[in-house]
Length: 494
Ligand SMILES: Nc1nc2c(ncn2[C@@H]2O[C@H](COP(=O)(O)OP(=O)(O)OP(=O)(O)O)[C@@H](O)[C@H]2O)c(=O)[nH]1
Ligand SMILES: [K+]
Ligand SMILES: [Mg+2]
Image (cartoon, rainbow, N blue to C red; front, side, top):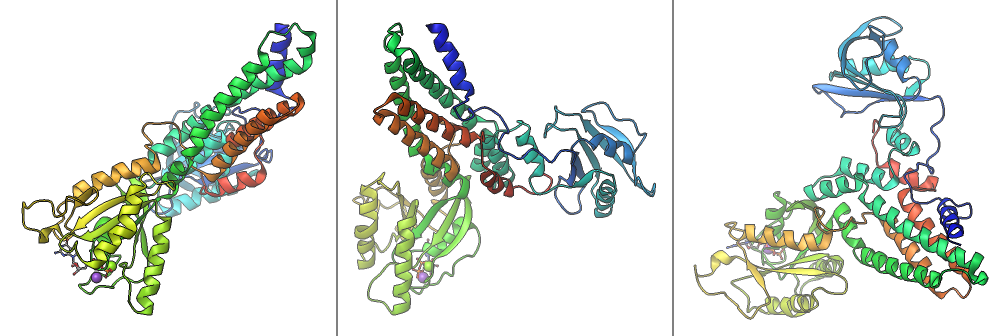
C-alpha cells in the first residue's frame, strides 16, 4: 500500500492533473525568440569612468570575436584586455576589458559577453553601433536580460521582483527587503507551503484510490486535514502582515495634523529638510494638503502637511479642514502636533478630544492606524520646568525652532515605522506587492473550500487550486500579462 501512496505523492508533485508546482521554472515567460542576440548599455547613461555593455544570446561569441583583436575568445569569466574596433570599417574604438560568460553559467543562462569600455558618450555609441552591425544582434528591450534569466529558470518571479525593487530602492529598509526577496526567501517559503499541499493532495488521492480496500493506514485523511489547518494558520498570519510589505515598498503615509499655528508646517520642513510649506505667525496659513516623499529613519514615507483643524472659519479654510480630515483617515501614522505653550486653548482641547484620544485609545486601532503626540515650541516653556501636562497621553517634547527633541522624535518614528512596515532585517519575508497578497488569499480561500467539500474529489480539486495560487506567486504558469507588468519596471540593459 505505501508504495502506492508514494507513487501518488510523486504523481501529485508532477501533475498531470495538477498545475505546475512551485519550482524555480521560468515556464511563464515566452521562450526568448530563438536565435536573437540582444545588446545594451547596462551601466547608467551619461559620462562616466567605465561603461558596461553586454550581450546575451547565441551570437555573443561571434560578436565578441568580431569586435576584438586578438579574435580568440578570452577564458570563461575572466577579464582580458582587448583592442576594440568596428568590424565594418576597422576603425579603432577603445581598449577595453572584455568578459565571456558561456551559457548556462551566466546571468541569463545564455551565452553572454561584457565590454567594460571607457565611459565617454562617443566610445559607448561607437561600440553600440558596432554591435548593431553584427548579424543576428539587436538592441535589447527594457528588462529583456532579466526576462531571459527568468525564462531560463535563473530567477523565480519573486526574485525578479526583488531585483526590480533593489534597482529602485531609495532607503536602507527598502534595500534590505529587496535583497532578501532577491535571495529567494519568499519563494522558498511558498515552495515549502506548496510541498505541504502536494503531500496533503497525495493523501487525499490515496484515500480516493485505496480507501475502499480497507488496507489503507488509519488516519490518512485526518493527517491531510491537519496539515491543511496548519497551513491556513501560517497563511493567515502572513496575510495579516501584508500591508506592511506594501508600505515598505511604496512608503507609509505619515500625516502631520493639529490645531492652527501649532508648528505643523515647521515640522514638515524640518523632517523633509526643505522648505515645502509656508511658515508664518498667521493661523490658517496652510490650506491645501502638501505632500513630499521623505526617508524617515531609513524608512520610505509620504509625509503630508495639513491645514490646522478648527471650526468657524471662512469657506476656503473650511475646505482645507475638510481635506485635512480626509487625509487623516488615510494615514498610517498621525504626527499630532500641539503648541506646548497653548494646551488649554479651545482648538488644542478640541483636537485632543477629536483626534488624539480616540486614535490613541484604539492603538493598535483596527485599521492599524498609529499616532505620535508631539508638543512643539518647548523652547517657550520655562527651562527644566515640570512636564506641562502629565495628564496627556504619552508625548514627546520638541522645538522646531531650536531642534531640541528632534533626535528623540526620529527614534520614536523609527519604532513606529518598523511596526508599520515590518523590520526587513529580521522577521518573516514580507509580501511587498498586491499580487502576492492576491495569490495567498486565493490559496487560503481554496483551503476553506477544501474544508467545506462534501466529496473527496472536490476536496482534492480545492487543494490543486490552492497549490496553483502558490505556483503563480513564484512564476510557475505566470501569465503574459503579469510578466509584462513586472518587467516594465526594469530599465534597458537590465
Ligand atoms: N518659539 C517657537 N516658535 C515656533 C516653533 N515652531 C514653529 N514656530 C512658529 O509658530 C508659528 C506657526 O508655525 P507654522 O509652522 O506656520 O504652524 P502651522 O501649524 O503650520 O500653522 P497653520 O498652517 O496656520 O495651521 C510660526 O511663526 C513659527 O515660526 C517652535 O518650536 N518654537
Ligand atoms: K501659521
Ligand atoms: Mg501650516
